Length: 396
Image 1 (cartoon, one colour):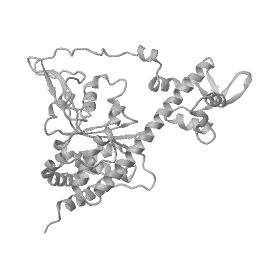
Image 2 (cartoon, helix red, strand yellow):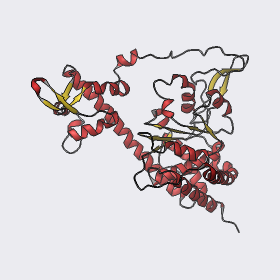
Image 3 (tube, helix red, strand yellow):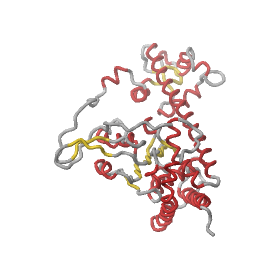
């Protein structure tokens, strides 16, 4: 007799997990579990209520983000690379059986100069949940038409993506490989057929289970949007059985808690930038402030007086500002006095990006909030921000 379906699924996921781990070094065992389940969940998209994003981010180039997409391309359901794909094409191919969108260099879609990609950005924001169509003027009669946006998407980029994406994503924070961390070379001639075999086996296993998946309401270790995002992965784990239900929930808890810490750190660093700007302004916006002067001024207010065990010190300050490429340097002040100091000009870019003054934000060029899309040739699909009717709220 053959093995039970549950055992079959658990063994298959184990094999897929091992295959993915051969080609990429992921930041943790939990991350490898999550990527495996995300790949499998793409094969039951038609049964899901939410399409979780997979945010594959890293601080620099060379962290393996694109290699993750290479592996996903050969294992997910109906992959569609969107680096050079027309957004109009993406809108048209998403339907009842949506593709799995794979977006490399996703940071360029959300940057300050990415206005021409506004439609793709809107699709990625809206497509996390069913019944969130994008309305477009289409056809020779220019009729308003609702285009589906629901599709799973993996996005790889440098640095964090916008909160609208990160809040709807399983976040994989890639790192550069350490000396001694070995991976198998990815070669199309033999790697692609091997991974395609796993893709076909996942399809064969999960296709008959889509009805069961659609009816499942798994117990989740998290709530709200995190539960929406992780539910498809937990459903796959529960279908597989074995150790996977426990492993999936452990990964969910560990990775969502990690993101909470990341959010708190981001909020703290933004607060630091604002407080440093305030210190410079109170001092008359000098060219530079000695590190000790800056620390003393910051220590007058919470949370810096209580930071660490004895308050914020020079090491803490340098470490918190490292992500913004700001560091102290030797500076010569009046009367020839030299000291470690922070140069005001080095903060200008970070202030403008992460905590702009209201006047700065108002003066930045902006698109009109309500602008009708231009008329288009017959049959074309004009580009415009998603909008229109939203679907029914999901009952919990």
